[in-house]
Length: 111
Image 1 (tube, rainbow, N blue to C red):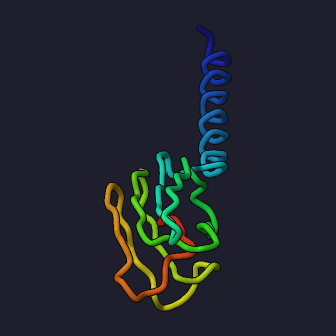
Image 2: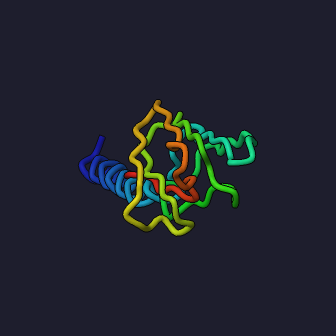
């Protein structure tokens, strides 16, 4: 194999690696479901939501949440993933609200 051909092959491999690495953050998801029960006892499951942004739960809020995804999440009592009252929910765990407390209304993904 000529030196020029090896250089071209190596350069192509490097460019391909950089291109894949540069695009790897696009469209990333949690990989797995996040399931919850609303205040009205309706079971909801969201499969592989995006790792970006704030995700709203049902309008009535969630009283129980099971994080069966491959990433940790943070639950909030507000609709915009803000506020002092938040709950950290690691992978493969579940949590329920304490009676008399507000339901969770949104979550964000820890990444």
